[in-house]
Image 1 (cartoon, rainbow, N blue to C red):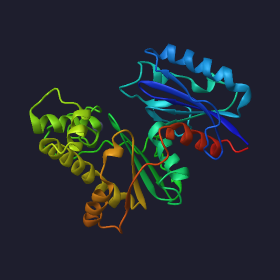
Image 2 (image 1 turned 90 degrees about the horizontal axis):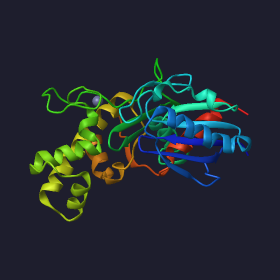
Image 3 (image 1 turned 120 degrees about the vertical axis):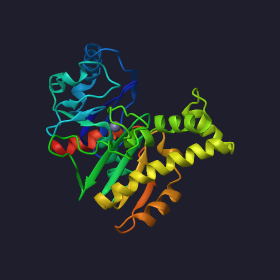
Length: 292
Ligand SMILES: [Zn+2]
């Protein structure tokens, strides 16, 4: 069976593993802390790739940042990666074909091929973590847009300029729907500036009234975004993935969303393709692009 070496490059960790055309991980998974400089990142990538290059057919890379339509370059930077990283010449890292795609797009493709959105040709995956990422699949194809970076979840929520997002816009979806958004909501509700996302989640488990209030407000922010996405894209389902996705009450969200949308009902689901969705999605997209 064909095998890819797949790498997931995030702000804090880099993962690597070999993956087959079924999306199965067929080697040990390597984990490295993400180096601080772009140069050191390239040295690490070269080292990993050179060790496995002879065993695999292609290299697939899931990365933070927006990736061009040709799947060769990062064209929009991301605050959490080293200065100069977007200039990385990924194709020069291997003598085998190299494929690059945005990590949220890869996660969406993994959900579509082996996860919750399997068999549903119109679907959206939101990766809810420190920030928010998104991947949109329309009629069985990943939506890339004119420059390749479609699916970025930065859109305006309201006009009262209460919060400023990592993209520098005020009142953007991400600064409300992310883990960071939950933390800020927790500060708003309790007045405690030192509160963490973890404190709020633990408080919800313990039935703390203020924490529950913060959590409900946060969920309703996400719901506002889901209603817009459902009406615009008319998806079969929207999958909530990422470290914060698991804390969402998807049954409640699905009920409220479907009460408000003008399109036919959509499903709101938890992700099921796991922590390595980025690597799996990158490999499966790469196999499609470089047909045997
Ligand atoms: Zn934003």
